Image (cartoon, rainbow, N blue to C red; front, side, top):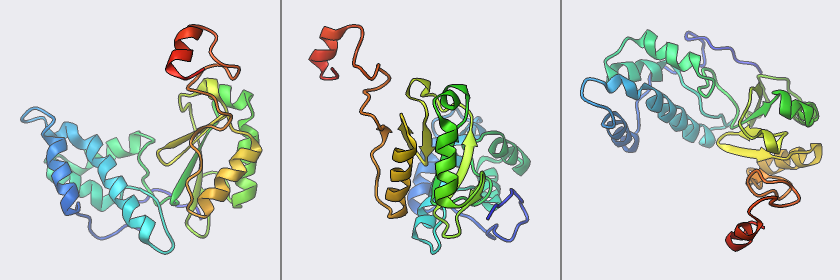
Length: 219
């Protein structure tokens, strides 16, 4: 259930190429940088590869989420004319890149102090109990992987989780359970605050610039 990063593992595909539509994106991404600086595109290309794998994974049985195979890193190294090791170094340094297969829905629970003080332990418990897996493990059906991460940048709306590209804030054990139920059926849960909070304002409403808030419809 837990897959460690291993460039020689059985799950590593033999080859990787960008799809035709993504090959156009590759050219556009490289073109953003000055001549001779194409290696600066390594991070967006890694992200593109991870997203392409996620698209393929959503159609697979069992499904899987976005991750970056060794073959993809080697392919990017060839495109950018850089040593493969340098691509490995970038991919392994940043936590946004998954170096081994993950579930279709990657649940990243923030465990930093504000979220912890607001009950992230309860969110973690619900996820573990409901999914039957521990941290950095994937459910047998391939749908969910559970991870604990550092600050996700919405401390006012703690506790929160990130699932793939979406953020779910102001969570409780009950709302986290409901989110998992929706995703289990491949349905889209409500993203953002689960308490109806607008942006990061107080739950009671705006406390400054009240007139402006009313005019813009956030109060």
